[in-house]
Length: 161
Image (cartoon, rainbow, N blue to C red; front, side):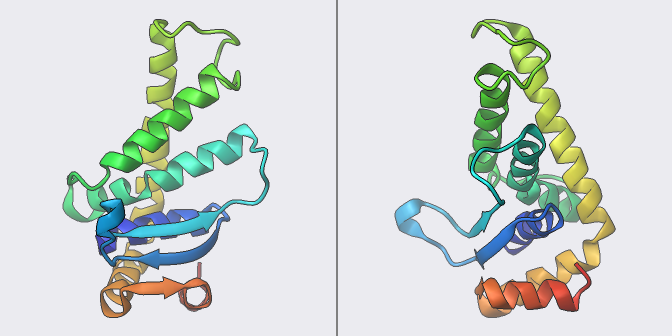
């Protein structure tokens, strides 16, 4: 969980999000073992900003792949969120190769899959280049369980991100 949440946080930071909190505390009510609260600037997102959200959403999965070489069942919700966002971009916001798609159009799913694969690949590359920071943030999360905005900002500034 600590690596997973650290992965989200590092990707969010690198893509310019404002991170409010990172926690590895279980929240049984929500059936989650950890969480991150972040926000990208603006309300009406451009395609590039939506792609940043998808990459950040897949940051936990990418961290697991970098550290363990495989994923757990942890990224299940993240993958569903990223998939919904990719399909929404293409189908409802005309951010795909065509303007109109039918729900049965296989190209809709091919394009969504391409978005997800590229986001995962980009997140893995970023985390691989910053694996030392991934380890440090994981250790800090294990020690403190929850980090708040000032602590997060201080951590990243101290570690060059």
